[in-house]
Image (cartoon, rainbow, N blue to C red; front, top):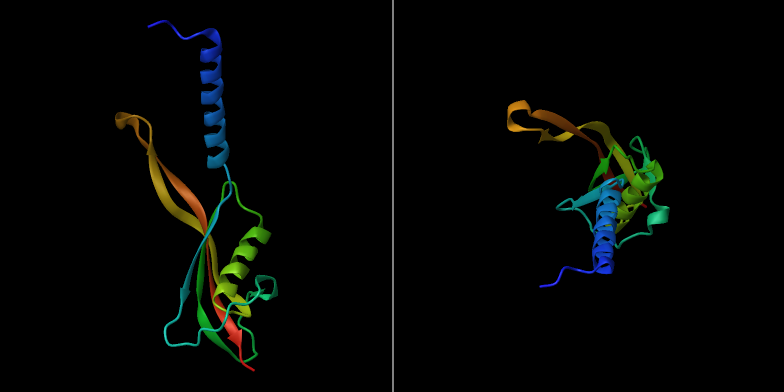
Length: 141
């Protein structure tokens, strides 16, 4: 079988370099993941418009009911813009029909670990992440 031509090797190396660059770029992206849980035994109103959902840091005095919870997992290094985190809270809250979401937990801490290095000199590195919990509420009329 003949050896690959110079142009074929060049194309292969470009392809490999491009794939490597793409993987590195994707691994360095900020992430925001959400998980929504609707409470059992409460009303399930129609979805609302995300831009109208208000993000609060304390429970409002206005009468309301609790519809469910939104849990957010966000990267720390690199951290996403806070506007992106709040937008994710609004979007998930709107799916449950909420008028507002009250952030009750916002903490950066260890979310995992990984081992690095050879077996005889292994080093364990902590993985930091941001966790948020919001209670979705619907105002009573």
